[in-house]
Length: 52
Image (cartoon, rainbow, N blue to C red):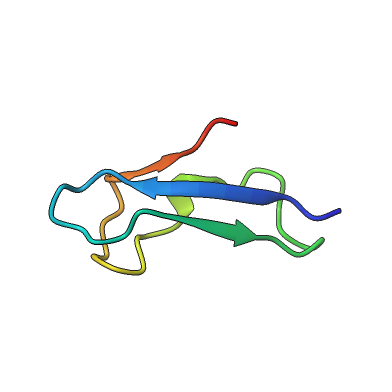
């Protein structure tokens, strides 16, 4: 099963609550939350992985 990454944006002015990234099998193992930006506010430093 491909990996899933749950992400939250911590920027107080951002309307986004949480989103999931569903990887394909071809996604490199070292890809993480720092490789993405918030689709709502565009923030990078405000993204945090949700630890389940």
